[in-house]
Amino acid sequence: MKLGDGVEQAIHSVTMLSCLQPGSTLSAAALAEFHGVSTSYLLKHLQAMSGAGLLEAVSGPKGGYRLARAPEKITLLDIVLAVEGPEPAFRCNEIRLRGPNPYTCKPAAPCTINVAMLRAEQAYRAELRRVTVAGIIADLKTIDGDGAIAARTNGFLALHERKSGTAA
Amino acid sequence: MKLGDGVEQAIHSVTMLSCLQPGSTLSAAALAEFHGVSTSYLLKHLQAMSGAGLLEAVSGPKGGYRLARAPEKITLLDIVLAVEGPEPAFRCNEIRLRGPNPYTCKPAAPCTINVAMLRAEQAYRAELRRVTVAGIIADLKTIDGDGAIAARTNGFLALHERKSGTAA
Ligand code: FES
Ligand code: FES
Image (cartoon, rainbow over all chains, first blue to last red; front, side, top):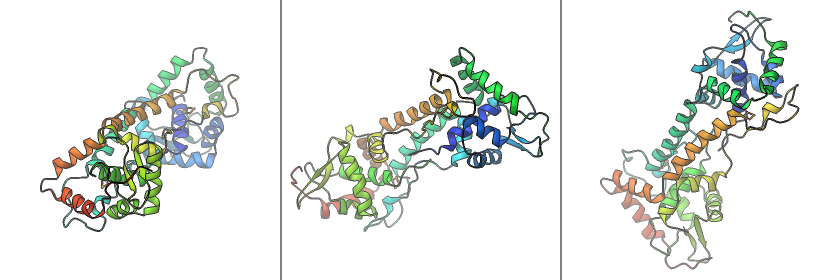
């Protein structure tokens, strides 16, 4: 089981966008540069998050991406599902119905193995749903004793933040 | 995020093996036939579970697989980790350290995003650790009102169970 590398990039990008002034945007190229990743790959995930209503794409020379809602209203689960898709990690192929002596009629109850696997997945999702982008930023502040993390972010934003974009 | 199809096959196979008489085995071919899956693909997972100490491989003409410990002592987590490997689904590439203005020294605290993602994964694993193969069988009995599931398993085992194998 492996999440795509896009998840780390997507969460970091959303976290970065949450540091923008209201109305400002950041280009996909700037987000990719800051995180040292491929712009085209990151763009795919930014578009997925726009499609899911987490980000807003602003067009034009002053355009880029910004949050579509408050950082308190964006959870890690929102981001993971936008990037990885809504399907559960465990996908039952109903192998209990295969083989040389199939049931004459399909058992009415779902397979107990499937039920147990999906219950674990619900626990995973519940945990991701409890963490918001605002919470990530708050946690970040507690580990940023000397302010080095904030200074690095703010230095980059001072160069790349695009003010007063118009919604696409 | 997707678990391989081998997980479903592996859990069903272990569940089937838990229905054998003490000392008996079932061949990989029989397990594959019962579940309507490829023997060579299933074999890979049976070998992984042997390597992890969940199954015992018995050699010789009466050989096959049997549980290496009691069904109460085998959890869904044991099986998932044996088949999928021990690595977490989220793998931090430390992208916070990349980009055009890297830190002069690496922040001592782990990235808060990584911490949150791994915490969710711990919740997932804790849930899978709570479910044993014995528990799966007990749950199965509660949904097997007319005994059709047990009858199908027992009918197949009557033909394919290999008694009195010797440990490899
Ligand atoms: S049939 Fe799919 S998990 Fe049992
Ligand atoms: S650097 Fe990997 S999750 Fe933040």
